[in-house]
Length: 211
Image (tube, rainbow, N blue to C red; front, side, top):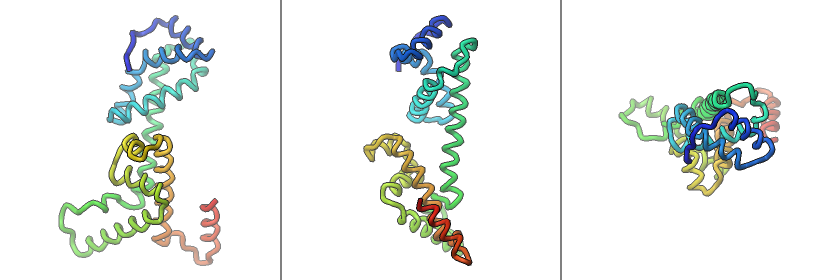
C-alpha cells in the first residue's frame, strides 16, 4: 500500500469528521497515511510479513469502529499507535491461548519422527501419545480435523490454509478454534478424564457439551 506524507492536525480532524459522516474516501486516506506505522507495530509482534498485513487490516477495522471514541484534544497518531499495540497484545494472547489448548493436552511434535533412538519405555510412551492423538483427531469432523492438522502439525499460515481450502480466513480461524476445543475434549474422553463413579455428572457434562 502506498504511503502518503503526514497530514497536518487540522487535516486529520477534517478527515475524521468526514469519516464519521460516512465518507469512505476520507477513511482510505487515513489508512494510507498511517498504514506503514501500524504495520511496523504489528510486524514486531508476529514477525511474518503476511500475518502482519492481516493483523494491520484487523487493527484498522477496529480503529474505524471505535473512531467516535477518539478524544479530539489528543494526538491522533499517538492514539492510533497506542490502540494498535493494545490490539497486538490481545492478538498475541489469543493465539497463545489457542495453541495451548492443544499443547497442554499432547505434544503434536510426537507425530514427527524421533531425532534419536528412544529407550524401550520412552518408545512405548511415545507410541501411546501418538495413538491417543491420532484417535482423537480421527473422531473430529473432516473439516475441523483438516484445519487443525494444517495449522498445528504442518504449521501453515492462516493465509496458506485459506488458499488451499479456498475459504475465507475468518472461516479457517473459526474451524481451527472449534477443532482445537473438540480435540482437547476428545483427548480427555479417551484418557478417561471425564469418568464419573455415579455416571450422573459425566452424563450432565455430555449433555452440556452437545448443546
